[in-house]
Image 1: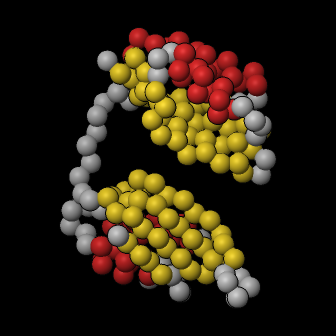
Image 2: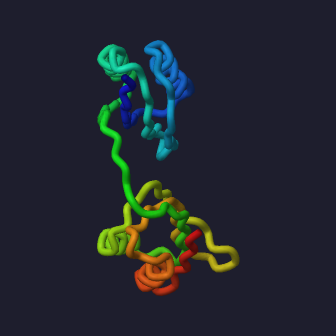
Length: 168
């Protein structure tokens, strides 16, 4: 049986962090499935999913805990159940003037419509030739069966004064 682990990792950024984690996963017969990592204000922040043989999970967890001595905070979660979600997954891009509370309003709209966030990245980018910042969101969301892409676009465009929404 295969065990799936979700790890969140946070600590001072330095060369070799990803390699140290990858080495431990490999030593326990594991496989690195997917991850998102970034350097934020001098800190390494990552979330990843690994799989390993169920009989090796405890040993892998114990070895990962030893990385705390290197200043890393590692949180582990596991769930060996297979969950199947319904509805299509669509790519989404939202762009507009940055406004306080914009992420909250987008998230509230998703919740109200029953949209599940599968992946979401947000950033602030300089608006070309305008001198202000643009709020940009890119990701993937799962729509409930009874929600059309056009209804989602309309609801999200109502969130901010000048948001453009592209779904495909």
